[in-house]
Length: 178
Image 1: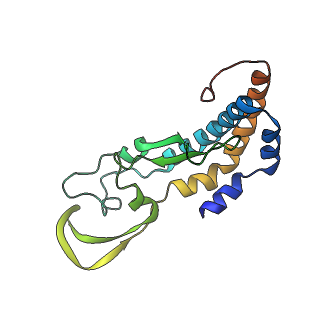
Image 2: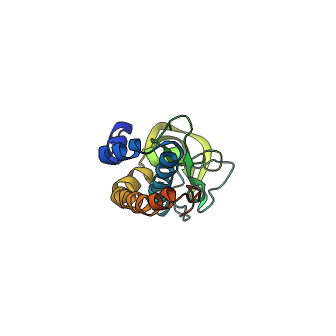
Image 3: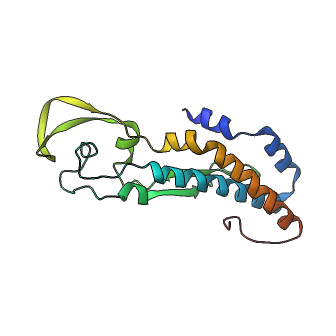
């Protein structure tokens, strides 16, 4: 799914129109609360779907020769973060991704890759293959959106219904609180 397709899936014109009628900090806080609620659902689903090294060679193909894979490393590196550069006014953008410093192999699993090293006895070596071999993807972010996108939207709407009366009453609970 393209970035435009993802945006279209969550671009609810009715919600956007209602948010634009609210003023300043109230709109910002409501939009942030709703975005966090949806993002948490997507992040949690991605964590459930993240492949975990189980000792088999299926996930070993992209492993670093010098560092053996650590079970749960990718899952633990998945996060939800606010995007300051893509957020403005009532449009609050959060990203669900993985920390590439903690799990630099995430893109290899999400998208697949060409393997150029030989694996001998289940252990990657520095020996080059005669011809690169395609290693199939084990995606976790894209399926998380497909599986939990509707649940994320429901969580956002539910959070908005809870948060709006609090904001209108002057309650200043932060956006990241459930």
